[in-house]
Amino acid sequence: MGEIHANVSGQVHSAFDPVRREFENLWQHIEVGASLCVFRHGELIVDLWGGYMDKAMSVPWRADTLVNIYSSTKGPAALAIAILHDQGKIDYNAPVADYWPEFGAEGKAAVTVAQALAHQGGVCGISTSLEVEDLYDWGKMTKLIAAQAPLWPLSNQSGYHAVTWGYLPGELVRRITGHTLGQFIQDTICKPLSADFFLGVPDTELSRCAELIGPNHARIKPAPALSAQPPTDLFPIALQNPSISPFKHACSSAWRKAEIAASNGHASARGLAKIYAALATGGGEIISTAALRSANHVEVNSTVDLVLGTPVRRSRGFMLNLDGAYGPNDAAFGHAGAGGSLGFADQKTGIGFAYVMNQMQADTTSTPRSKLLLEAVYACL
Image (cartoon, rainbow, N blue to C red; front, top):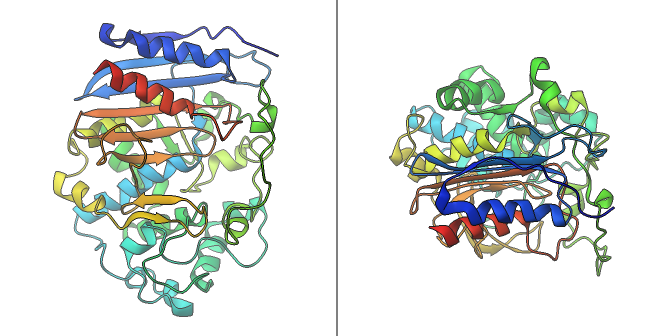
């Protein structure tokens, strides 16, 4: 199947017409359904959506369509901890075990909150075999993570905690506030900003969720990968235990309703962009500028990741810009998700950016669609 008609709707500021054209061009390739939203200094300058919510291309994408954003979820989760820090309830330099004593087992007693958020805690995976359904059991997962021995000698090295990371800020929030992370995010971030983002989709909002479409179901098939070998020995335990199917698992009601704070946030582009728009202006009404600066203290600086095998820059939960992934300014921060979603803030230009979609990136060697869009935005500034 080739090109489809995108039926793009929405608005752009007249100076950003090229962004609309770039967004529309995505449907000449593999795009099925997507939305893009950009604020600048708090002003909405791009708000676009188009395509379809389902693989059969029978249900039009709407302005309020929600879609699983995988690891882009980590951005709002990191922000939640930053808000707790702003409230004086958590210290980044304190051991995780000060708040969650069981976590100190197996030699992890000295791991600080900052190190855990920067993927330096050594628990990028669980040594025992997991099923996807285990991820829905908060008590089971937090017990397994607390009891897990570090998978490398603890130091300044980091290894991407693709799924397990979410239980770290989540359990810290639960221990400190008594609330789940999903509820805390709603109360401290989403409601004040009227941001359409959920960690744990309510029953009333499930009908707004788009179907994810795996890379192997893209309309244009990518060239075969040069190697099917994992990039590192730690990759399988971090990203393939358990193996998560985009449709069978990540489109199920059980997945959508669970709180997997590393990988199952659901958002519209407008909802995610509102969060980063506030951060792009220094924190807005939800967090102080000083606390946001502390959250973005550089913990990992262009170091090769032990799981991914590629260089990364990380702060305390956010990914920091590297190789222009978040625009031209090194201080930009946010988080991308598997398949292509992206949210970030750039305080230098006041940009709060979000792109979400249901067709996951099929060709990992091609330029990500998010980068094509952000480059179009910056070309208009």
